[in-house]
Image (cartoon, rainbow, N blue to C red; front, side, top):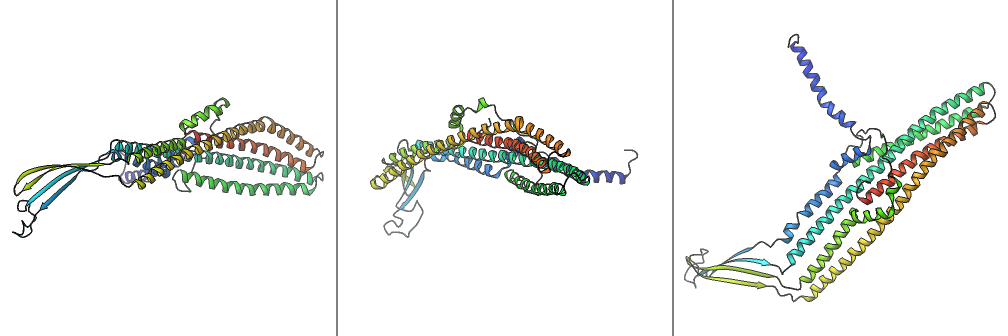
Length: 426
């Protein structure tokens, strides 16, 4: 390289070394937070609660093979007559004792018990997977709801600042009229009091934003003060035709993670009851092995062993326990189904109400409040209305806008709950 001195080269390398590590960190800081989709994508790979439930589901799946496997075989060796009727000192050498018996045995459960144990383990694994999916649905719903609240608070803060600027202009109008002897000093004071109240509301809104910011970072497994991009937009609400109760109720029964988990538990309880009744039959042990005399094997033997199920009172108690557990699983699934369907109906009504409130605020309240404010402002400037009427008109505009964004956030929260019940996005 011509014209480049060693000092210049060193400076360039130093600048690249300082700038290099900072660029990825900066890009990561502004990568998420603008949309709820970016938050969900980030949380799916990093939320520790969901990762723990996935690990538990993986662990439950690994229990299937051991549950259906035969027990490990046993090897047994017996040294008989280690003193040869007192002719020698005790010894443990197989070639010097009277005889050595070797036995290789295998425990074999009654027919069908291994299959039942494997099926119970498989159903428990399915239940664990359902719980993991339910955990993610809960986390996703919390992220969606927190994002909607964050959007509402952020827009409310922006609205409050706009109204604060408006109040400053009204204060200047009141001061001008007071200077001309057309209004009382009380009008100026009222404008200043209203501004102070709005500044207090801004402090409250900023505090609430901080709480929501911290809550979202906790769900994302990030430090509490890690930066998030400002919320840009909310997801569009589904069309009313897609929010039919009968259709969604059928989807909830088929796909809700909680109901799927409870269904697997119910089937596992049925298999456990069947296994308890199979315990009325004995288990077996079979074995075979040679008998060694000095250095030669001269005999072979085969053995069969079985346990005798005489403790009937114990087994009847186990059977009654399995029946009670099955009844509990049925009742728990029925209760979960009733609760889920009730929540679905409640949230469907809630999302419809939020949609209608938003439409009323957008199409009726805001235009009417805007006309009222313009008329009140003109009347105050002409001396036909007092300042209190103008303040009321300004408050109506703010209330209408707050109702609008509040209804939008409420609709998003209801949508998040419906998707949590479905276990998937609409």
